[in-house]
Length: 69
Image (cartoon, rainbow, N blue to C red):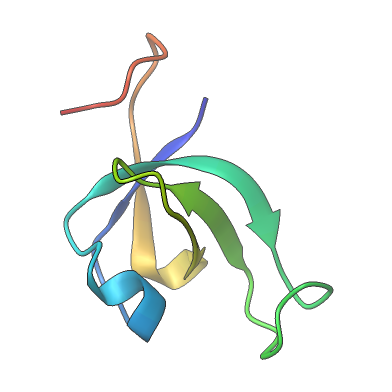
């Protein structure tokens, strides 16, 4: 599992997740993004899957497979 934290939200869809940690469930890029940004599809605690750009996030260690607090 791969976890990220939204630290620099720049787009409307990621603004409400500022400071939150979510699980990466996929990638998105030019082939499935209207504006050709590269990033991750991330599932947050509310069950929403949101696309976030790579420069909006930092990786969070969750080596035991559980979401970090």
